[in-house]
Length: 71
Image (cartoon, rainbow, N blue to C red; front, side, top):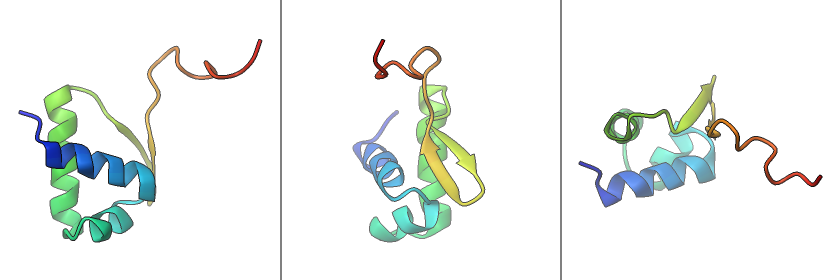
């Protein structure tokens, strides 16, 4: 089941770009914050974020890349 708090965590992660900063902004420990994101991704059955070292970016659905580019 998806919880509203998990969605708030996903928005924070997208905004702050790292688990550490997003967890701090949400007043959570980094491990608890990571568990929340992992549970959300498992509930949805998709990875919501690309993890590259400390940096985290939202994933793109296939076909969305470049959609906002002009002709």
